[in-house]
Every structure is written in structure tokens, then in C-alpha cells.
Length: 602
Image (cartoon, rainbow, N blue to C red; front, side, top):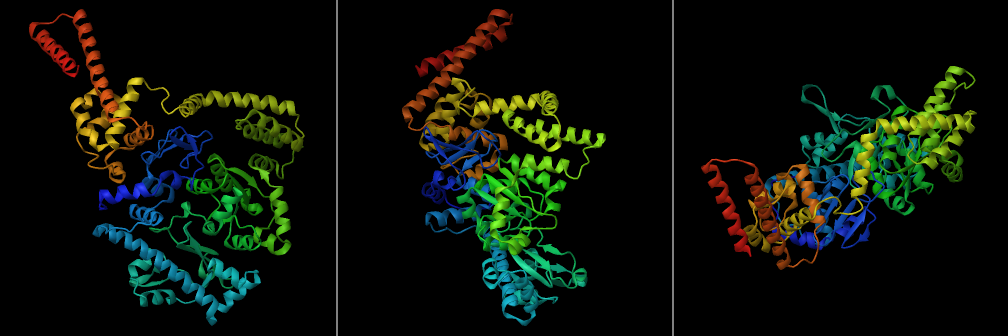
């Protein structure tokens, strides 16, 4: 969030009006109408019951599961990992609006990111030119052709070659007026001795890495087969930069996302050449994970586009612990994970080149569920005739199956495990039930919280009092209807509210978080996370169509109700306590003022 951004209230309001939030969110979340709102599965956390709501009347969203919320500007910033300025640009382009001038500080930061994109794009073209057009690229071109990667593939993925020279790219970019500092920030050069710099990628085939919008954000370099030891590791990637985070991106997604959406599934592979071969063989929903250990950010990114993921790693990688943890992250994100079993030493690139697409289709059809795959890993190469080994395998399988929530699924996997291991089904079932009982006891508090959370998702207003609902409606209209603020402030004070509503009312009535219009980008800086989540919650729950007269009636009710309750407390207090004359006089004066306020409202 950039606090120095200076867009007029009129421009922000017009932008929000033109860029309809339901249309925008529907690009990422399947929404269904629910009253005057829309609901769907939250894209920011894993869930099975929809708790994510969008209110088109005020262009706000809120998740009642994880607390995420905001307006359409905040939604794009969070889901696309963009800066405020980049988000405004995206929404303006979507709405056909022209951007106003930026502040000097914002313009400088925005221009630097734009220059990084331009720099990477030019570097990709340079590498590609060296590969296809220059004599020094012939060795790399021959290497690619030997791997059945033709010129069409090279152009589609913009593959290039970093020549075996120290400053070829550096000198090229400097001649194009890119500063040394910017080239270094892009991760394209490395600092040497005596403040010298040299190209980071040398004697490597270059694979540009794109974000899902099709902008070059980084590079992966594979050393040629010769002289590998002299040039470092087999694969070398760009470092983290202002526009690249390895844990938030996936190779090939810019080309695969439409196919992934259409098929509602993706195929995840390890290497760049795996993806290239997959796409040329018709598997256009294939992407690579930029590493085998999946991150939550990558899992959420995939969940935006599909509900199923096929894992096509080679046998050694698929079975290691880092990969299994990554697959659990995918599963926890609500993705149905299937594992394609490849032969030892084989990978998708080899399989597609040597045996063709039809064989790969067969592997897709026979892919194992994540649980089946884990069972295979547990029993793989184990001597089940050895009592100690057999007992260890039994315990591992019991623990695995006991973690399955669905009882019917547990029974299915019990039968499969018994068949694979020759254990008696009834023995496994008995031990699994014991383990399930232990899990329930161990996680009792967590389960209760899940149940409570799930129950809250059924009704937006569940488990809050009628009085609280009125408080929230008044605050929602105070926020969204500037013309009502003065009249509401004459009737109510922050003391008339309770709990979080009182905290928010105190800030609102002082004018600390809103002025003429509601600018969510500045409000988030003023409120803590909990209060901002509450802010978006009450706006999303705001009832549409209440008249100004009705809102003021509700404000009068809140005020009178609070006074009446206070009077009751005073009367109870007087009936049970002894006071000196000064104390009694103070209480009676307060009581008299309350009567006056009630009479004045009546």
C-alpha cells in the first residue's frame, strides 16, 4: 500500500462504479446469487462451505471464514499481488478509463517496476536473438533440436541462449540506457571484485519466466552439457526481485490458464522442457512448480483456475518428503491431487518424446489419489514378511487413513490397504477407529472451532443480537451515505454502541478514517486487521434499500434503548446501595438528564 498515492475521490468513485465487483470477482471465483449478495468459495483460504460474500450494492466483499475483505481495489491487489498503482492501472484499462497523474513518489516507484518489466522483456528478446540468429548460439540451438524442441517451440516460449561471455548482456542493456543499478535489481548481473559486474547467466539455455499476465519477471538458465562444473549448478534461476517471487509464480501459467479453466484441472511438472513437450503434444494445461515443495501462495494460485491437479514428477522427486509436504499443501487448499506414476529415471519430457501423447494419456487415466500414492510410498520396497517392518508399515497406514475425515472414504482406503498389504481388513479397521478417536480427543478444541465457523457461514447475521444488527446497519449507512452522517451524529455518540461497533464508531465520528468518500486504500492503513475485517463485514451485510427516514429511526431506537438500559441500571443501583448526599445528587442529576433526552426525542 502506497500512502503517497494521490488520486481524486471522484476518480476512485468513478473507477469503482465502472469496474463492477461481481464481474471482476467472477473471473476468479464461481459466484451464486444469495439474496441481494453473491457467495462462493473464498479464494484466500481453503474451505468447502461458501463463506465468501460479495455485495454489488456497495462493491465490497468479505469472507466470514478467514476475515479477508475490502473493495474491488483491495481484491485485485490481494489476489494478483499488485501494488496500488498497478491495480489502478488494471482496473482503469478494464473500464476504459484514462489514468490521472500520480504523485512524484508513486510515479518513481511505478516507473521502476515498469522499467524492470521492460528490462526483462528486452533481455528475453536479446537471449532469443542470440540463440536463433548468431553463430555463438548454434551450440545451444543444436542442443534444443536434439531434445525435439523446434523453432516454433522456441518462439512460443521465447527460449534463448546466454553466451559464454562475461558482459555481453550487460553491455547491450547499458547501450539501451538502462542503469547499472536497475540491471542489478533485475538480477541479471552479479557483483564481482573491485565493484565490477558480470552477466549472471553464461553458457546457458535461457527460459523466460512469465507472470500470469504474460510479463517476463525472471529467468531460468540450464547449463549446456559441456563444461558444467565450470559454470556452477545445472539450473540457475533469477533471485527474488521487486517483480519476482518464486513462491508466488508458476512456469507456463500465462499460456496454460485458459486451458486449465476449461478442463478444471492442471498437470504439474518439474522442468521447463517438460512443459514445452507437454504443450506441443496437446497437454496445454501443463505448468511447472519452480521447485518441488509447493507453497500456499502457489496452491491458492492454482485453486483460482482449477479444482484438480495431476502431479507428473519423476519417481525420485515424487516420493521425497519435500514433495509430499507440497502435495499436502495443495490438498489443504481444496485441490483434488492425483499423482502420475512414472518409471524410475523417466520424466514427462522423455516419455512424450519417446513414447508419445497416447501413452501419457494412459498415465493420466491411471493416476493415483494422494492417499493411494502415500500408501504406495509406505509399502514400497518393504519386506512385509519381516515382523518389525510389517508392524511399522501397519502403524503408518493406520495413521494415514485415520486422518481422512469422510468415513466412507476411510472404508474404501482400508479395503485397498488391506489388499495391497495382506493385512486383515477388520484388524486395520479396529486400529483406525482407535486412532480416529485419539485424533478427535486431541483436536477437540479445533473441531469445535471448525463447527462454530461452519455454522456462521449459513446466515450472515447468525449469533448476533437484534441490537447489534441495528448498530451495524447504522454504521454501514454512515460509511456509505455521506449525506446521513451529520444527522446520525446529532442523535448518537460512540458511547451508544457496544464492542467492536463502539471502536469503529469512535473513529468514524471523529472523521479519522473517512471524509467525503470512502477510500478503502487509506482506511486499511488506519485500522488494525481485526477492525478492518469488521469494517468490510458490516458493509457486505448492509441491507440495500433502507430509506433515510428508516436509518434515522433506527438511530433514535439505539439512543433511547441505551438510555433506558442505563436508567434501569441506576434504579437497581439505588435500590441496593447506601450513598452520601453528594454521590446521590450526582446519580439523580444523571438520571434527570436521561429523562430529558428521552422526552426531547419523543
